[in-house]
Length: 294
Length: 292
Image 1 (cartoon, rainbow over the protein chains, first blue to last red):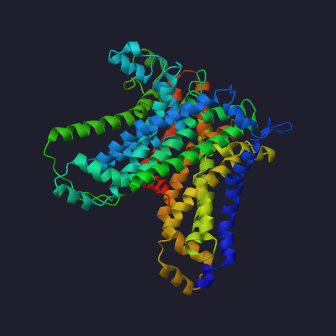
Image 2 (image 1 turned 90 degrees about the vertical axis):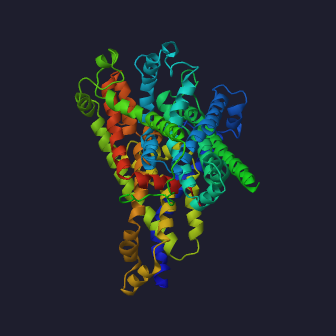
Image 3 (image 1 turned 180 degrees about the horizontal axis):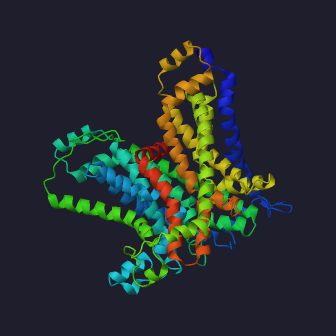
């Protein structure tokens, strides 16, 4: 048996294809991107090495709105953590404490997560459509017709409109993670608290939420890094427009590379996004660990 | 009580009667409203996919269609090329699932069951993939595929989809493989099985539920993927559903019905898979999030 499980040839056959493909498709491209980001290159003619100039032009004397796109993604992260997660948490807490139809609600809330982002994006474009869209129709029905507008075409509302769709799509995802976290808490603890006369709300704040710290940390990390990486829905709904009002770093990166052929500069954006995600993940985990120690 | 349906989550709480019934009422009202908000847009989509613009413009933007125009579906399937997109998505997704399942199960078996020194290093190396945003690999992959003349091929999508399915899949699968009882392998060994037979006949059948979980996860992510598909494919005959329906609004102009029909066609397969396997999907999402 031991001999069988130490079979070098089998181990090689089982792992090498995975190792090779993973290295070539995931790991090496990162190094390529770092390399590209130091070049001035249109992807076809000869490239010139320009050191950190690309990174400098992201922030110093920037003309393509990169700084604003970073600010937009930070706003998205903020509303995601400040609005989306609390709603998800509330739903998770209610469902985890056992209500009739627990399974039904959980299944229903999760539906938008499995639907393709392209479909979600096209659907919300219809919802926001000026004349016959769902939102304006509802507003008119409620007698609020004067607020109806072309939500995605207006630079004042486009960003909020796109963000609303994104929050909507992933509420169920965070709800599910938090629900699983809340469900894994032993019911004995609640019994004990109930004997001591604790109310449901007290139990939620003093037992459930503190014990859910690890999963809450995961959710905050996902919400923040997800905001920095967000691409599909914005690309489908507005492509960063109108007038760059919904631009985030990923959409800007995409147009920089594939429409303006600035491969080096676009790669610098890609690397910025990776670093931004890593740094924020570390900071969030630090914050949660410190809180856990208190 | 009837038969308890198997819950995917560990603890079942004893239900308690609430003294104050209004609070219950508002609780359910709240849950109900959220459920409507989460689902109604999709129902609305389904409804308008059977309408034509006349009906929508003359005041029935929200309600049940007066006539169920199945011709909208016929139109997009034939003139709108959606049939072709659907086929492409099926091919790419099926190939991705087959290849990734093979790589994931073999690698996970070697990590979880076999004895070699670097296995933990290897596992952690693969798990690095969970941290890498795919945006960062887009351009390098594009350049490599262009140089190899592989843009505009199924292969250009299957390759990255397979590889990006690996980290999560290996992670979930290793967890399951570790729980296989040693005795089973040992008795197989006494019967003179080779290591490949042990893997194929003993380990693989036991982890079938995990294979399903991983396959569903892979299905969802490759079926719905947009960025690679949008970048690597420009040939109309190779476009997958996500890319195809992006251009649908262009082709169909402002015709609501056919566009809606295209969106419904793209969504129905995912919803079928979701309703068949909703517990498994939810479990796989959780397993994927709570890594080591």
